[in-house]
Image (cartoon, rainbow, N blue to C red; front, side):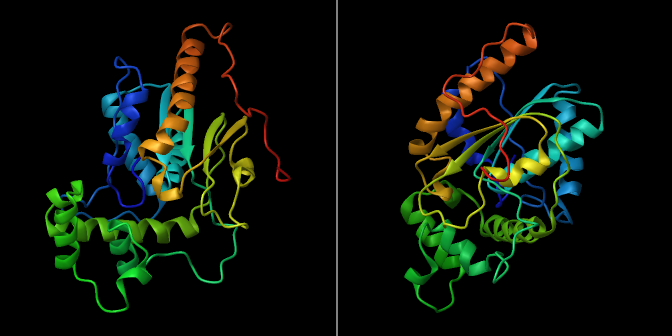
Length: 266
């Protein structure tokens, strides 16, 4: 499931860790290429994405993954599939946590400038306080050879709008309960001391939550360094899941996982 900006190219590195015979589909946000209404909730998004997913694979079980906002979307898709009588056999979440019950001094919704600075991979303070235009951003992206430079300015504007909308929707998103297991990867670099941990998912999953710490920043969770850590774990879990689907009474446990159900105290 796409992260906050709606583009799923970031997951291409995962293909190096998934068996070639295993198909991988990336869901991208609407309104990136066409002028379409943006969703008003994660639940609305999930219902739409389930329709698209089932055009490719009408029946489960499904294996879902999402990073950042994509982790919230993946959970919402899993519960929507469950509501329709379909099973999700693997729900993998990369450094994503529900925030509806958290208290903030200031709502964590990025400004247009924040999102543009993120595209340039720099702190907003590094580019001063003056206006940052889309033309300037496009020029920097082209100079750096960024994949985003292949897009038109209207696409960059759409990504910014999608990112801000998804951040707003996250504040009101209360996940439904997923009746299954979760695989959670936690970023450990530049993490605030009071940042939510794996336990924040406990009310929203009845199964076990296998939690792995990844030595990477949140915005680097799909980069090679992070994928070198989480990719083998994910590949092992996919293989284990598929063995379990074929032979439900003989599936081996995933090695080296912290696979105990978490409590709020954890």
